[in-house]
Amino acid sequence: NAMPQKVEKRREFLINLVFIIAVLGLLYVFFKYMFWITAPFIFAFLLAIILQKPLRFLDKKTKNKYHGFWSILLVILSICVVIIPLGFLISALISKIIDFAKYLLDLASDLPTLLTTLEDKLLSFGKFLPERAYESFSTTISTWFNDILENSTSKALTVDFNTIKSGVTTGVSGVVSVVKNIPSILIAIVISIIAWIFMTKDYNKIVKFIQLQLPEEKRNVPVEIKQVFTKNVLRISRAYGLIMCITFFELFLGFSILRLTGIMSNKYFVWIA
Image 1 (cartoon, rainbow, N blue to C red):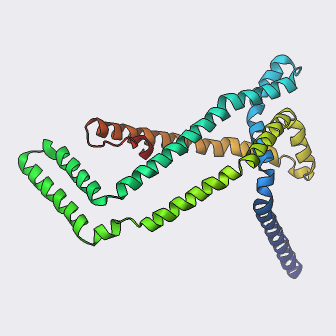
Image 2: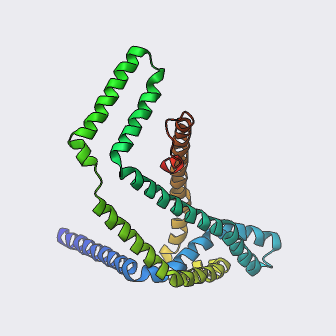
């Protein structure tokens, strides 16, 4: 009896191993060859899940008489109120990031001047100290900056303009590639919106169809996955989002004080935060 049990355990292990390898292989093939083809539909389905709660509320109030109308209206409102403003915000953010990168390149192009300016700012900031403390402070700061400018640290901080040029060229080529793909992106957006409307309207039918494809004992898996996602993943995301917001406002407040006191004069302190 001991031998058949060992053989059975090995067989189960091998079956599970082959199953895991097959799943990983299918995921690899999917993400490499099929993800971008199916991305509009996946994105539309995720958005349809978000709209189910308000849609059920409206269906309950109208006794399911205008289910299709409410589905279309919610999608249109989501596009107008959330997605379009979000698109403009992302576009403005990208523009500001590009300007900030140019600003950093301008600073880095004349490193000695930058270090001298920073030294002067620190020395002027320390003038509130008592005379002896200020002398010690100014001597330490001046010595430190002179060491940076004179010794090998200065060489380590010099800018490799060939690297910058290569990076800028790569960035420009990436932008050109995106511009060339704009027609494909627009088509994908239109397909996503149409799929979003239909999936919002027929969400329950889609979920039932998926459940019917699963073995009977596994038919509650999609519901359980959704519950785990809403209870755990969203809660963790909300917590991390709150931590990021608190950190941003702390840095924003600190940089604002530094700017008001004249220590920090650049206009990109919001993006640094």
